[in-house]
Image (tube, rainbow over the protein chains, first blue to last red):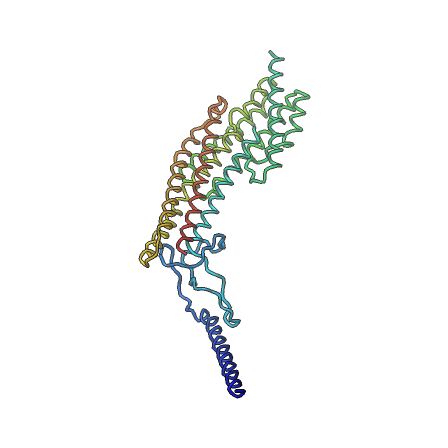
Length: 121
Length: 255
């Protein structure tokens, strides 16, 4: 009886250890996989298929780019040897950013008109 | 007659001084870009006080030249704004440049006449003409700025067309992949409608602005047009803001 109980305990312990080992490997693969994603050219402006993040406040410095050189592949890699670069803005989002800047120009013109009139002659 | 003319002149100087004070307050309070050049309190206040108190030809001439000088400076700044605008059409730019050049030439000519003027009565009329004949601040400035704004609205249409084409392609791709794109399609339609509304509002505005004259302003018929145009520009801007937001909704719908 005592021997069989010890055998059961040993089997359970072995199963737990095996489970931990398998889980650890799986987690490692999950983190490693994105770093292996190929860097491809992203969709050119006007092409479908972009599924990257929408960045409402996208970088203005890249707003003129119509064909991003880096794909919109997820950049969640934790690997220290291959640091992920900055996310490439969606070209449509970038165009919308540029549009918003031009809309601001309209605001500025109206405000300038108001300033001129408020001054009287 | 002489007393009446003097009262008229004092009223004119007072009006200019009050306008300058108001302008100064507005300039100090406004965080917006300033279009008016050296308008505002203090620019010609000293000269106005001297002209009012002495009533001499020399003092009046100094005051007049100060007022002409700040207008010429403003015209130079407004002219620079023509070059800086991104969406200006060439015809509107040319029309406004011509108006600015005409005002600059007219004020320069008036300055020469004032410099040679020895009659106080004639000088008083010339001082009034600085304001009434040109309306640099209350008419020309808004004409230029609002025309730029209206043209900027129109210039945004090709940008939105580009966005619309791109989003339509993405929607088609998503549909081909079996996704429900009804929300994206609706948002794209809303974007295109807002852009069309903005363009319809802005399209007639430059012509309305360019037709205004100082005489119309003096008669009271230009100010309502300016107010109407300003309201239309702001509505068009709001439509474009809405369109931009709708474009982002499409992106979110397809994400």
